[in-house]
Length: 109
Image 1 (cartoon, rainbow, N blue to C red):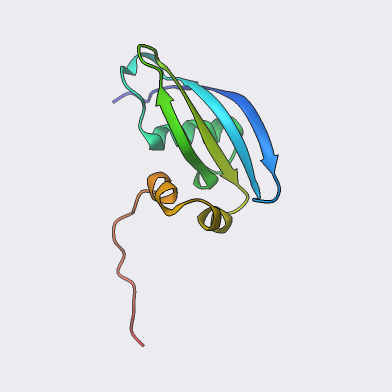
Image 2 (image 1 turned 45 degrees about the horizontal axis):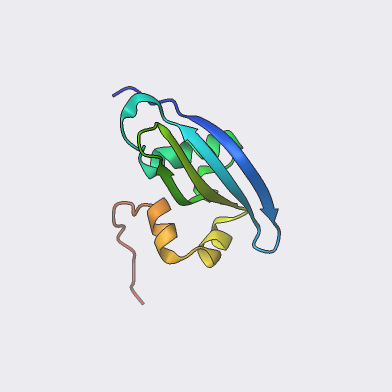
């Protein structure tokens, strides 16, 4: 499967020092895929455009306009992962960081 090249355009960028994050609006031209790209790919493309760590980029929302190959959305880029988990609702964190394979943690006392 060929790697899709998405053209990301930053519409607005605002620093929020209180919440230790950058709030960014963006548009993405996702070509001839025929559908909205998966969140993981969108997140990677936006992180590359912002030159940010992909793990600190949290997509709040994005959607493709009907009949076009242009998606628009909003992301928050945090200074740290701990801050992101403290601020973002749990469902947003789960959407952006899909669960890895379950890890067996030692719970011996």
